[in-house]
Length: 150
View 1 (cartoon, rainbow, N blue to C red):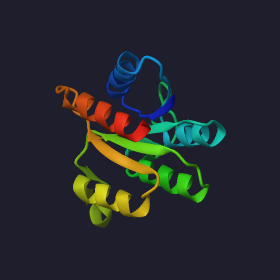
View 2: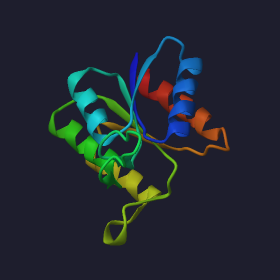
View 3: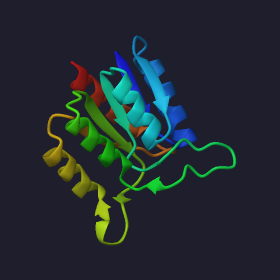
View 4: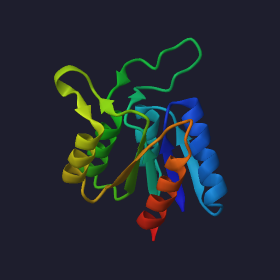
């Protein structure tokens, strides 16, 4: 099984990659760190599962750069592109935030999950709330991956 992980936070991505490699030893994972590099990867290559962060920089951040514009709902935009291009892949959102967007577009995690279920019923699998100091996210992610890929 091939898993694409789109995540910009270095600690979070390291923990997810290590968890996947230890828990699912026969799975291959690839990491991309921005909206653009993640979207390009998923359009060019076939994956069985996508682990997706909701908030991403527009471009990969290089030393001395800021990744241009930070996209508060980049994960939602990626799902929209997958749906538009009829790319069939199960998506699990892995996030460490409880709110997304700002101002009038501010949305809470529970409402975002409902919106994802309604707008992307074929693509969206579930959401895992990641916390660096707790390990419950690993159990939840393992259960969702097993449920999604069986």
